[in-house]
Amino acid sequence: MTAERLVAVVNQSGIHARPSAEIVKTAAKFKSALVLSHDGLDVNGKSIMGVMMLAAPCGSTVLVRADGEDAEPLVAAIAELFAAKFGEA
Image (cartoon, rainbow, N blue to C red; front, side, top):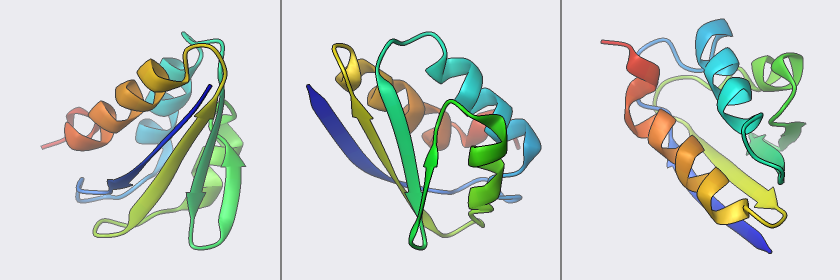
């Protein structure tokens, strides 16, 4: 099963170390593979270094794609992190 969703980066600092860690920590709870895409770059969403390489700034968008048995809940969980600004003010 494959699922994907386009999400907006709405936290002020964009995707830096802490949001990257939150993404990887959340993704690790699922079996499905996760790929994040921004500005022509596709990265493994379960790799902290990969996610940090995105360097997606506030106001940009990221395509969240998952493939596997729990793809839909994984994409939903990652989208919720983005919507909640990774807990940042």
